[in-house]
Amino acid sequence: MNFDFFSNNTIHIPIMVDEIINLLNPVTGGIYVDCTLGGGGHTEAIYKKIQTKGTIIGIDSDHNAINHTESRLKKIFCNNNSNPNSNSLIHPEGSIRLVHANYTYTQDALKMLGIEKVNGILLDLGLSSDQLIDNERGFSFNSNGQLDLRFDTTEGEPAHVLINRLKEEDLALIFFQYGDEKYARRIAREIVTKRKIKKIETSNELAEIVRNCVPKKIPNQSRFYNSRSIIIDPATKTFQALRIAVNKELESLKTILNTAPKILKKDGKIIVISFHALEDRIVKNTFKNNLLWKIITKKPIISSQNELKQNPRSRSAKLRCAALISE
Image (cartoon, rainbow, N blue to C red; front, side, top):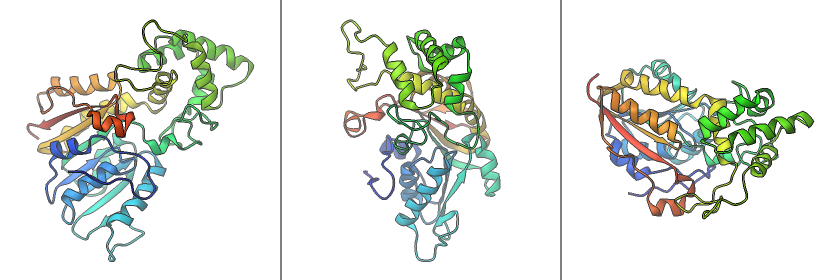
């Protein structure tokens, strides 16, 4: 089964859609939660399986994602009886409900909607392509926009404040722990040196500092390639680490994994797509060490070669799935 996602105002390509649909196996009348709505590709695919009687709740901390995806899905699905100003889309017996919130508040969002238990939960922990092209957010290495990196720009501390405030050793720890950056100390030292002269404000300023700290040659291997032969910018790990720190992503992941058994029906499934070894380890250990879970994917599913050709950003994605044994 293939879905066409190149419609309306999103350039984001959802990852492993067929695998998600096969594992989640959405049923007519079921209730599902897409905790990371983004461009809405996964929500769209799930709704195509459950439409007219089912419900899917899309949650995202990025207000822009909520607004853009709401508009896009209404254009695709809404019938003439739909209220264009309602956050309940599509059909009178089934709907897509969109909620602006961090996914750590999923249980609260469900209570607000009068829902106690759901059939499935999905989390795609990757960065949306729509966010990458937003120059005002600073997710792109070559952006002249302010280095922000927050999903929700109304909460927390932007990355440019963090890197101009933290001590050298604290910055190095973030880069090493969250980015597995081999040159973390060197990068942190150079940031501190540069900010004494001028505060680091934009993404391309930080990216250039990082690139100058990474050796131009690594024996027997280009610094621009990983094991799957995809070009990697040397600033990737540093930006990833900062984004994780700014948005408290690992803490949020642990929270939703602990919450999931409380909101899933018996035999309900949770699917998590991670892009970082620390994220994947948290998911793997949670499923393994909690007797409430039956592990569906003994080994993580990775993107096919065909998907990699269409979407190189899926190169580091790992999908894990588990089912709730008992409520």
